[in-house]
Image (cartoon, rainbow, N blue to C red; front, side, top):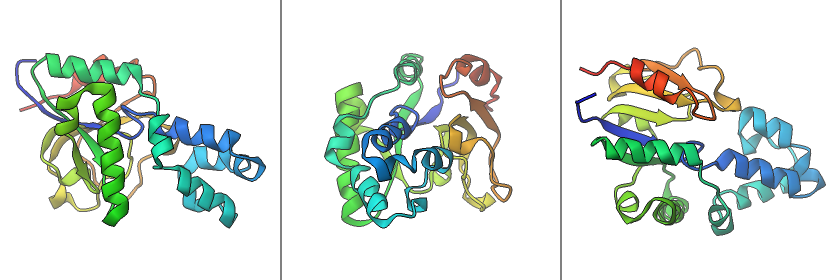
Length: 199
């Protein structure tokens, strides 16, 4: 492919194994926490945890400095990210954004993680958004299955979903650009990427 593409590469559950880190915490966070491991793996929604003290403990862990320090990278995803850079594409890491002080703290910790794993250039070029479909790009690589219900808001040409337990089905009311799906091990990446058509 000769065309230089603008690519937004997802942070959560793409480059960084955030789901794995949460499941690990649920496994070893105590009896009440462990009860919700299976439920969390299915929905990835901490707010579904009914026990208030367990839910607060999970939410306090997610996004903490300790959480990001121990967050493991996905080696295959890192390799693919670097290969896209080497191929001459404009690749930026795109992470989910939050409002207020929580968002500022999360952005700082995510940038630090990216700088540690991928270097200063990747850290400086990070993009944060609560609605990635609004960002202008030829391709977005992400684990979210819910994009947007507003067709006019879509500015990306293609959306590749990284398979996870929580995104096996797309919501029926979600309007999406052409979608490819790769498995959680990224073993079919080249096959799916080669099928995409860019103008």
